[in-house]
Image (cartoon, rainbow, N blue to C red; front, side, top):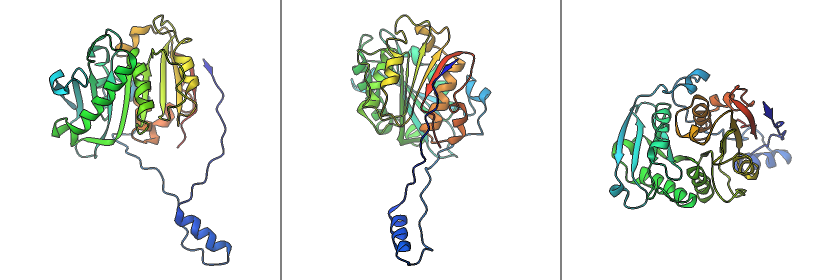
Length: 302
């Protein structure tokens, strides 16, 4: 398996204003007992300690329910869809994920992500597009509209479980291109995962959202050398980025359940939507699964 060497970086020291002031006092001989400590990032860990077999499984530890959203309820912003949400209310709210299919594909092409991710502790909205021939930008706009619906108009049972500040996007093919557009348009998103992405734009250096690009070695519709690889290389401003190349995967492989593709989806979303460092072990150091022909990353850092 090919891999790019890890980047080495100095660990930045972040001081709060209070800490900076206290250090200034200390430098003049004043008291030093009240120095403030930097505040650690908040973790929204949900569920039991993860295992590789657990995140590769078709179902995780959470039971879930579904609700159908019609095209009429979507009001023309997108083509309707299905919301999958954990039944649990004892562990706090969950992050949200919207998923969009590709060119000439129905919601069915991303439907496998609903149960897969909801059972791992996410509120998931798999959507249909207004037209099967919508281009990537339109699909990205509909992804964002779906997130707006999720946070503002979904049933109370859904919103009760959703953290509107922890949202992510994913999509297949032109839906993967739409995922890139959504991440560029809304930098407040916590994660993006384009699957076999197709977009005429290859430079996404404006994206700051942690982004995992997945592609397949046998994909002739969106060949990795033309799409996934240059897209990954362009993500120079993303807080974290990774590129996973799936052995023997064709374009349609990403439109149905796959243990490795699902594993990477779960690990990336848990790490960056939930800020759950327990999942870093599946991303850094780079995974060595035999199903990967290449994995390149900036190596997530706790």
